[in-house]
Length: 406
Ligand code: FES
Ligand SMILES: [Fe+2]
Image 1 (tube, rainbow, N blue to C red):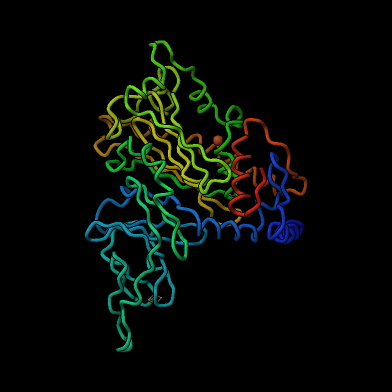
Image 2 (tube, rainbow, N blue to C red):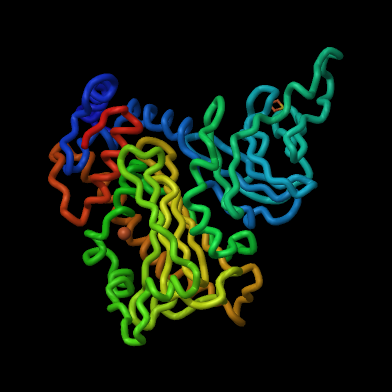
């Protein structure tokens, strides 16, 4: 990063600290919002203390002893299933002198034995009495620290708040009826993809929120999304959803909201039943779906945590900040746990559209960050189709900086 950029970053810390932000509404953000370490720290304080972050689906740790790590902003969280089958979230920090106790991303274990001096923690976080400690040492006081954990039909959310977490029910309650239609408690993962990209965390989610780039970047997605609606059989999507008992009032949060949530039911185009390259099914129906709705459900839990639900599969989409200029984008594809590859499941067909789309986006995002870091970059007016970015910016200034913009 150039000296000029570092100097601007220092200035930004002062600007965003107390007074109104250096930001023009309906414009892209100034450079330092995508580069400043000070600003990034302020954002992470907010994300850690106020948000429930989607971390995994519990079918990713199906057996007792299974574990996987969820890492965000340098923090490592162990998600594990204990010998009674209960799921836990622990900070991956040894209570002796702080080494990570778990150094593999996923696997199955009877306990977590710290690689440094072998303090051993059971799957419920309790410490087994370590060797060579003073007689007054009480292991019960040195268990692994738990992170706040919420579970919505197997979708696991963590909150890294130091004290009390925000209400999980308030966070998840309005979205639950949309999720519950699909029976995710009887789902299984068939494909997981993580990509590290050199970009500030706000660029992937701004990109996710606008369709303005689709015609230039995503040929395949553009074709699938551009298919004309089918009104030939006299039943509209709304009527079909009503007949199936699946109509729900849409969730569409404003900038003042806690989480900027959205939950919306959309119709596919003519002859499409799923989000695949040719629109045909790639798996059997999700566990609680009985008839093809020819539509899908788009959900934003918060600007970092998303899930799209088709009648034959669900895709969890995560944007996870690593540092001010590195972000992990992740996808987890879930299907009915009874689906069998080669019989009623075609994994390649199921993942292809999103894998192609994410690869295209990741290339664009890496380039975009590089361009923003140029001395020639300056904020410019957003297009009408980028109105969801404006909504995100309004929420961001409201919630993160406490400065209403609208
Ligand atoms: S730091 Fe873990 S046992 Fe010493
Ligand atoms: Fe895209």
